[in-house]
Length: 87
Image (cartoon, rainbow, N blue to C red; front, side, top):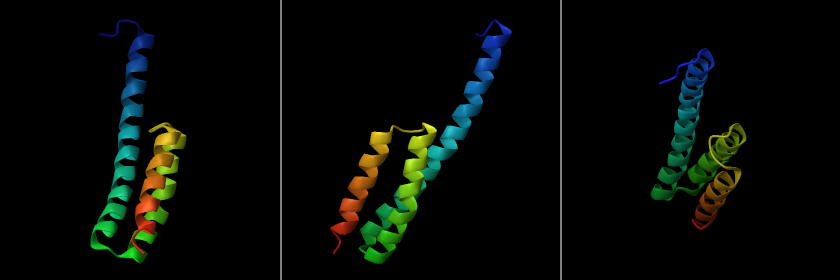
């Protein structure tokens, strides 16, 4: 348990940041799910549009520190590869 006032404040800050990051992570997963669903139906135009929306969300998450830059790039790359394979 936090004893000092600074430790208590740090705990509050961590809780606030965690809540923000949780929302960002959820948003990213939602956009990725849209791409996955479009891929499952086999609709290429829908998949391309979903990927176009998901890509900035993934990179924003990387910029904000929710996920590592390489992780976001890998996810974008793999999704793009799967969308391209629908042809």
